[in-house]
Length: 121
Image 1 (tube, rainbow, N blue to C red):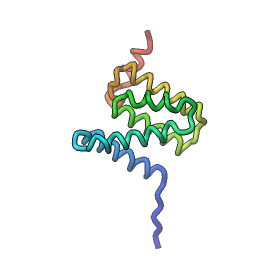
Image 2 (image 1 turned 45 degrees about the horizontal axis):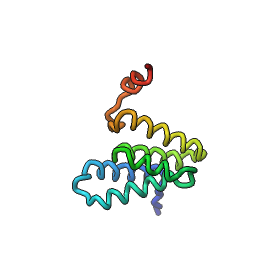
Image 3 (image 1 turned 90 degrees about the horizontal axis):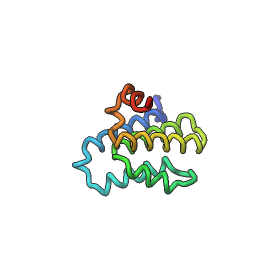
Image 4 (image 1 turned 30 degrees about the vertical axis):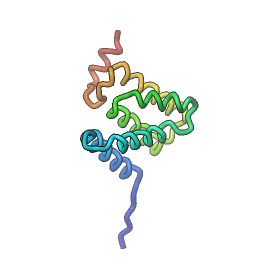
């Protein structure tokens, strides 16, 4: 008899697919359901951090797409390698600053040369 095994990678992949559908179909979703979904992701990402409220409000200021990308990255990082809270906090801070500096241009449209050219001033 074959048993069904659900791994963390499978769950994250399914979550990523849901997020992409939600971002692509944001106009067809009720705003309250999208807000709930983003709030829940931000809550998971910032849980147990000092200054949790500050990080939460910072992530809410970003574009929906970048917030979901950052959230998925941090959730995957917590699931796969379980880094310290300080490491997680620093990653959130850096990714928030990068998104904010680039005026919330979606991470998916940025390429390596764009990032390197702006950091070498």
